[in-house]
Length: 359
Image (tube, rainbow, N blue to C red; front, side):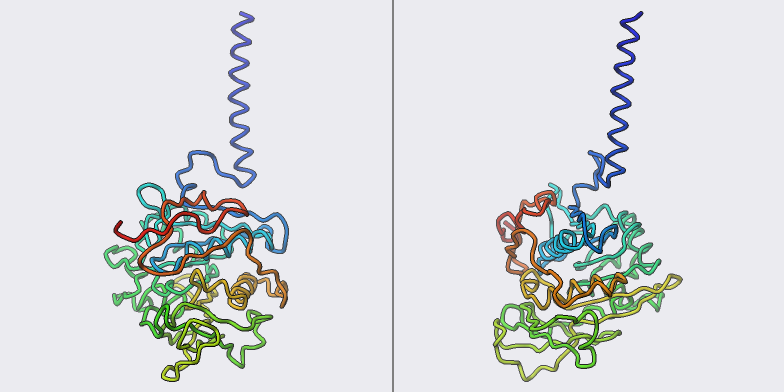
């Protein structure tokens, strides 16, 4: 009898310890092993700074501009230097490798407690459950930052429930004409206005917005991605001067006017609360190598999060860990990379080898 009681007590103790470990993991902000959504994301958690306690969710899935590289790089800067908890979510292929431009995304329930959403997306068609979380976030007026192709983040007319999010929506819901990009960011896809890899852009701050908090300490903005045609609804902060070349000193293309490249907008979904968005037609992997552009983005995070007082002209915008961006293009991206390969402060963004599509 004594031996049976000892055995029972030992088993009971093991079970209690097991459940205690689970509670501890959950309470410390971790995730219980086996959570299927874990494989879609990497989390950078800061431990000091003005952003402590605030959660930023990044969604990275575009086909061309290597948003799967620029977003985790920016997330590290914000987490390590300023204390934000940054969750970067990627689309995955059937082998759980990052698939730029894919729609297999899970884990958007983190938006339920997010303080900011940052998007680098193009032509996505998410499943209903994930769209529910996104729609809920936007209806509560959550702040949004959208990079480049996020003006045409969705192409999902075949999904009757969420077709109004599509960039080319022309249906019965007139408020949603031209989809998410038009309603939330202020512009949808129109056309290219500069030739990628042949024409870069110099970003010029609007004279009347020189004193805007987002532009504090920002100078010499130059980006490598080609321009877009944009006539956004919102407050234009900067315009792009298209250059005939791929260096900051290249001569301007005199045939092109200066179109908006960065702007803010107040948005409101039908039946929802008012929110604030910021959009830029740039942000590709190599664009964020420019200090001026990167500073504008860091400043925007503070401004749109209601932390304007934290913006200083000399905020630390240094990369955290090695960042060796892949040249953005349609023909290839770093293959065989899982979100977990980007964990920690010192892992390379982006590891792997560039593979031509179709091989």
